[in-house]
Image 1 (cartoon, rainbow, N blue to C red):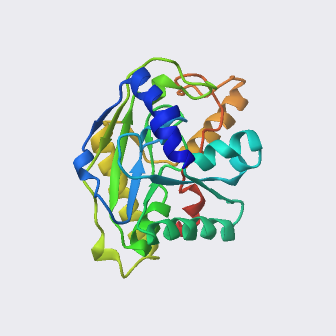
Image 2: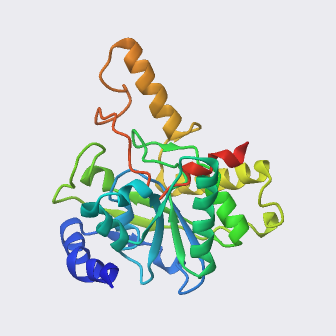
Image 3: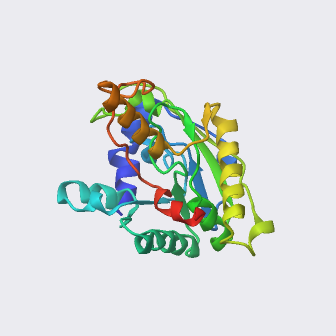
Length: 257
């Protein structure tokens, strides 16, 4: 109930008025049935815009830490985020099972294959968690790209600007029936994840970096510390803040061995 109140009364109308979002490819969203939405991740507010143009709900997986404080827990619950602990291998498997449960109910699961926000606006290597979900759940994956959200709320900025223009593009669904009998083969998982990232790159036009965003960020921070710099040289806003991991497949990196 609170989800629909935020969408149609509290937040939705404001977002549409302030940011005039354009939604392209809505015809690619099926009216029913399980589906994975795999999107690029350039801003904290991406998860608010992805479902805004849809008639169906989108359920995300998020860090359980977001639910530790009452003042923020209500918001994440209201925006369909399922808390997941990711500190260990068993927690990573728990995240996978939580995602499969969503799909098993015939719902839409939203995920960011990069595992975290892009540190500089480029598109980074995808984690294989999205591939495992697609193969074990036997569901299609819909690539989605967001434009303009990084300008509305750049990394490190606590609240969004009150103006801007956002565009969300929903690509054509990808199906992987040929791999359904190999849901844990790490080479197959890598191939599926790469195919999904290629489609996202084709839609977004982002420069692709064949490295995990989390590892790139850690390396830049390490190099900056060695050089005495305050921030990574290629981060557009100079921020070293760890980005939002909602929703994320970062915990599934272990599936690559």
